[in-house]
Image 1 (cartoon, rainbow, N blue to C red):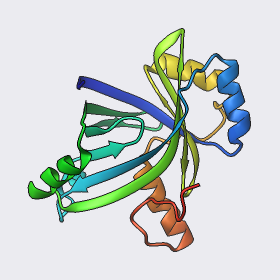
Image 2 (image 1 turned 30 degrees about the vertical axis):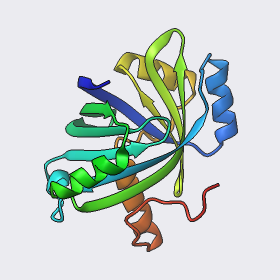
Image 3 (image 1 turned 60 degrees about the vertical axis):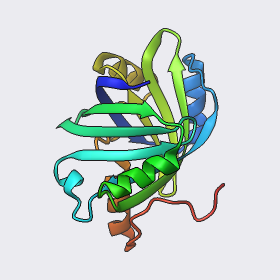
Length: 190
């Protein structure tokens, strides 16, 4: 099922104590269907034309397989906002080959373990716990009012807001540690 004209509004925070943070989510009534390993393949032209235009094209596998296009609309110190179109796909290998044939031959891979939480009283609010090779984060997505409420309830209001992508965070991590790997992958799946 495709999302049409969907406006993604989100904020991230780095999380150091995952167990304590997860207990807070559960205490607030958060429900999850479990943790999933997700693999995202990001596509672009050899000259990064999509990135230059603020566009993001991906195929993701994990709890569901999707083809997604995102377009930057607004980024500030408070939220990251993008237009998003997403459709579930059955055959990600064929979709990947189709995108390559269309000229999207530059591929970047991101792996993460994601656990998503929803709340019975706020079905359009999603809080995730993401474990990536370079750190642990929460991503909160919904409308601004509900995002602010859950930030307070989770005691995140004094933590640094992150309004950038995991790709940019990884790039910054690499610079800080003298690394050059473009892909965000685990050395072993654990």
